Length: 266
View 1 (tube, rainbow, N blue to C red):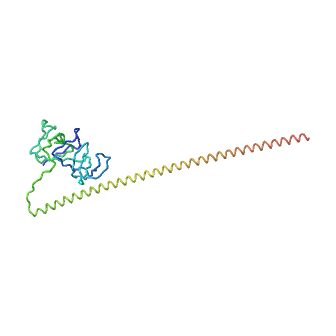
View 2: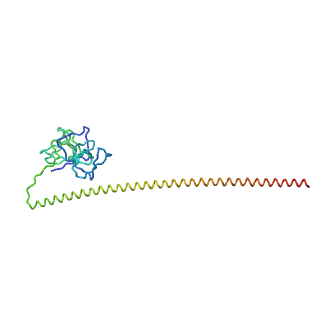
View 3: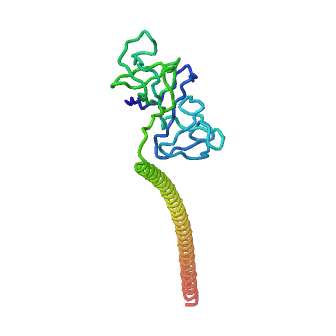
């Protein structure tokens, strides 16, 4: 069974979403994918999906997939972080260069081959990458259900080995899920710590600015007080000088008066 990968860019065609009988198997391709209330990154996060989770997609439009959760509620996820898986049901399926039966045949797929793509169905055709080229196949010959393989009858002694292997796979998957969840929690805790540090730093800066402003006000008041004191001292000195001059003038007048009196009496 061969696997063909789709181009890793989500594309929603201008004609919108088209229905098809071949409903794809949609799988999450990122470590943790936010489930949102509405199809926008500003919308409230109502849950998270882990890498490899199979999603029940109702339809996809403008890069957002409307999904039905296990709880029965409907929500939205970004289609950029999911991929659709189809399985070929025809014995031989033509791979074409365009979305029509008149276009060039690039190759052929056989029954149970796998196609993975992030593109949406357009007029009954799905786009994907085939040997490095953009290619199309007719959707009616695809299914989203993986083919059921008939297992050969094995001896009882080998059944235990198969069961043990299944348990080991389940244990490994559970451990991977737990590690992913722990990683997501650690990242959230780190972000919370960084936010708290940023708030503390902002508060410290505000406090420092307030202290600087208070010091500047105190310095301004001190300068004003010193200036007022200097002016008062200057005024006092000027008054003292004026008083001294007045005393000297009065003394000079008295001396002159005494001289005149002596001259008269002589």
